[in-house]
Amino acid sequence: DSKDSRGCGSLGGQSFSRTHVMAGSLLPSINSEFRNLDFGGRILAEYIWIGGSGTDLRSKTRVLDASPASPSDLPNWNYDGSSTGQAPGHDSEVIIKPVAIFKDPFRGGNNILVLCDTYQPLDDGTLKPLDIATNGPTWGVHGSNSRHAAAAIFENPAVKAAKPWFGIEQEYTLFDADRVTPLGWPKGGFPGPQGPYYCSVGVENSFGRDIMEAHLNACLNAGVKVSGTNGEVMPGQWEYQVGPCEGISAGDHLWISRYIMQRVCEKYGVVVSFDPKPIRHGDWNGAGCHTNYSTEPMRNKDTKYTYTPKEGDFAGKELHGGFAKILEAIERLGKHHKEHISVYGKGNEFRLTGKHETADINTWKYGVANRGASVRIPRDAFHTGYGYFEDRRPASNMDPYIVTSKIAHTTILTE
Image (cartoon, rainbow, N blue to C red; front, side, top):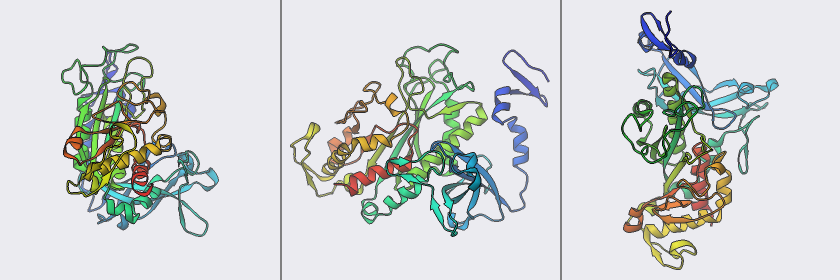
């Protein structure tokens, strides 16, 4: 075994990074030899669920004799919830129930990724969704199955009739394996000020493009409804967009996209962070999960509706059509601003400061093309009179089941 000053060595005549050894991904060429072996008609299903923190993802592999046609064809499974912060040791089993299937971009073939939600088995043989508090998920022991609660909202007849669409902008920050240094930053120091990094090109400005490309390709292969990607304002920070997706599927696709991102980063020996303010000192942008939203009446140019807003730039003006529906929904969000903030992500107070393209966490305001507002109305929607709006408050670590269902509930089911 040989090594140089960069901590690299050789194995079987091929170089490797010790970071990759730590990450559990050694030599892709050797891995592919085993991946291409014949499975005798059996397939691998990677069961994926959300852990006890509400932001961590867990998974394990099940061998199946045949490919399922739908999630209902897959068996429930269980795991040790005492090791994920979701159950006590004396009653440790948590049941995972398949809810969505995607292609496995890592194993290829007929192998699949299986998104699951989590249940507590009761003594009478029934299953209880892991507990949800009234103001959001309960972390730790028996916390939480937020998908089950969101699905109930999306199954409401009024919500289903409105056909809510979501487009979610997932920002993330890439770090070296030390978990301290963002990708492209000097060790123990800072790069040049923000400005040249957003949607940038060039080795001096763009850090982590290979990871972005690998993630995008893997998501497309898996069937995740990604719609774009770009470099962000802070160096080492990126964004991808998921959607438009209707109802509960927005959360399914975003969670699987996060899982795929973490798997891609394993292979590159890089750590991905969804912290909404990963660098808290200095003039650096945070990371959000802006949530674009519309109902069928909002995005329909033929909608017949009249509404007069009571606040903001359009106060006292009689509006018509889809744009009237947009403003009505925005004003409903404003009435429940604090409720939404309470479930829009942990640590969001460090991001929503009124600086770096955010509104202050205690301030509610909307505006056309205003990235310093709580809610931004695209200029196209303003000019055409129909479309969607963007809720800019959710943090990058938000739970998409909670955020999307909360927006739908407030705008459709709440006066």
